[in-house]
Image 1 (cartoon, rainbow, N blue to C red):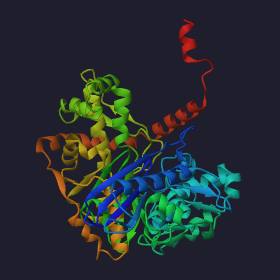
Image 2 (image 1 turned 90 degrees about the vertical axis):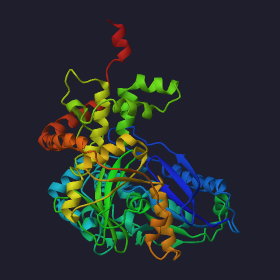
Image 3 (image 1 turned 30 degrees about the vertical axis):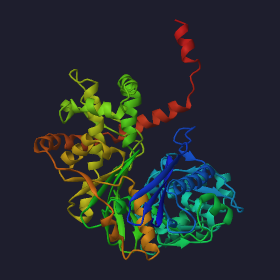
Length: 529
């Protein structure tokens, strides 16, 4: 029997707890899902109380599945946290909720992000805080709340993120780790404290925000009833941890110079670790904190696995249904269809901007499109083009990263897409680099757990991760495929810059159309003919 460490990841659609041995072996895990609330255009919220209960359930079930006890040899010695970035919750003076958790995917601050960028010297705020000016950031969300929800803003005594709320419910105090804080657009990277000018722009004070603490900060003294519910000793240390992006880099052992971690889940990101904060003069990349001497630069994309899901549900419904009837995973079936088509999809490109886009363009008005459709194209070409488009889009972040830090080498791939040999090979061919898939797919949870070991002086450095991460697949570029992608990649990357006005006009039309209800149900219109 051995001691156990728990890595908890509070994600956008679910909370996952993974129980590891101290050597990084997975013992058990439990996932609790929750809905994303999207009842109005641009809205993407979640119920904080539902997420808090999901955290409790996830931990309790993982502890139970790992056969851990409160005392004895097989006990939990630490719980450490990862969480999604950019969430905002407004609370009153009694810590009652005034809003749901407004997530990174919420786009209602789009107008204010443009105004901050153009009218309020947004690039200078970015250079100090490391968070690009975009509707995802709490800076822009709070500006939107102040001007578009003034009653809520006036009543708010505190603004916090979802992990801060969970820790408040567990321990009764308000702290935020430097990593989450560095993703708010409100945190000065050099001073490691709230940025006075950003707060002045919003008309708020540091007293309305949580106390910034290092990612290694930990707490003890759980309420006895909560501890019993979780199956933990009340003195079990809870490490506040970091954001999911930087912990994913740690969890795949991409923490050395020149190593790049690429993640594609629902969305996606590309990140690399440097030793001091660094921002891009053109505002293309983020810079987030991990621990002292470890900063993560990179770029996130809105469009990753959600594109494959859209293909499954909207473009290939018949094929997906047939796969289910045959007992085959629809994604596997669609991948096999895409494999029938040569690289480049016979000259068909797909821009996967279905949810606007973040890096490197940071434009919420971008929209998806097929480009180059001809009569010789069929559904199989569209499926392949969609998969290639996600990778082309991720590639567009690489020049921004390399402009800052120089050439990169090996790529570590993680997330749901890494299970697909086709997507992994596409990445190697498009990026023209070796792609390695680590054994552990729970990168953020493992990263959180290893950070917990370091925080509690149970590991001398973060380098212990190298003994915990194996490699299951390696892909090298195929020269013939890379040559095809070399011809198509410049076309893919040039189009968004040429269509800025068209994107803006079309997205405005879509926003207005979403607010207009049809005067007569569609079925009635059909029956009247």
